[in-house]
Length: 207
Image 1 (tube, helix red, strand yellow):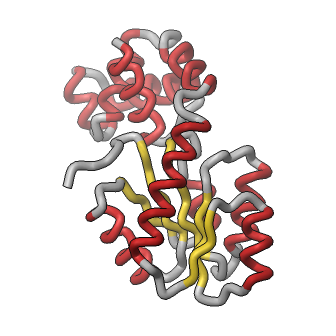
Image 2 (cartoon, helix red, strand yellow):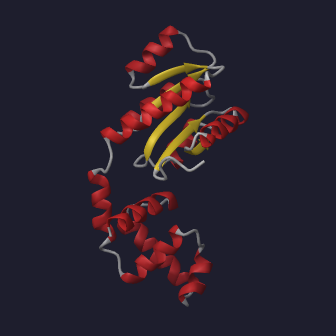
Image 3 (tube, helix red, strand yellow):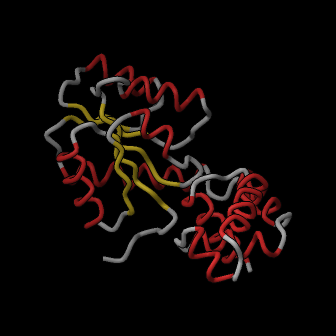
């Protein structure tokens, strides 16, 4: 099935990898792009909050609970909507989650149709409330400060090439490529390949 929106991402945060794998399959079958994280800290470090979508967040996880993850997201200003999942939830926990800003609270075992409906509503909310942000416009302005060589390098990074392959493609030393890549990332204030790819996609759409 064709992906619904290439720049929309559903994040699953659950320490039960077999469950998250099955949920990923369900969502991808429904046309969504999906990323899985085995814990709250991995999610907070690895996610790109500027990418539209939603977070499906397990409440009971070791190390950092779902409610603690949501609290940290809000303290960082993450606007991504959250759907809570739990096999241990009760009414008080659901009320607290909704007070903290969750858009839905669903108990395991899942009702698949309800979950898919909740995801669609959460993504629609995110698209209507965030869309193209000032932050993204600032990123485009920062991209224009790159030299032509830095733009070449960062586009090849976004295409999935490693430094050695980029060096061969551009007839440069690997060290020179590394310097251009570091300079471009510093100017863009973007480190992850997914964030860089998202930015270049927006730029190419506007041109």
